[in-house]
Image (cartoon, rainbow, N blue to C red):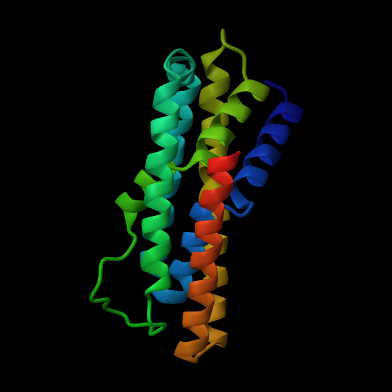
Length: 197
């Protein structure tokens, strides 16, 4: 595998990971609502969940979906339902930041599950596998996943830190609530995009 191929794989991974999407919006909201360790736990789960999905797609799951297209439709609807639930939780947040939250926070398992229900993650996996690997060389899939791992984690972490920055500079709970509701609306709108795409 050439250095230029590794560079283009890394560029693809960065573009796919850092571009806005449902998981990125939840990362941003974690930074505004919860202690940073909570956001990074979500990021770690989302990253490892994505890498597991990436390898599953790379080693044959995508071919199963082409044979049974109803599974893809089912995953899309489950994903939309999950994203709408996350949107509701975000919209109902009151804007107060506490070290100990009294309601469930999006943690490691939520992040991992969210990637499997995230059509953007499926698309990024399928597009990356299709563009940068060949069917007869599983080593390419492994290397691509190993490149994706730190890039995805750092990209999602950047969204958490952006949320932390917002929280530090926006002390007013009403303004934080407005930011959270705006993010919730964007998350809900992304569901509409996923349904019509």
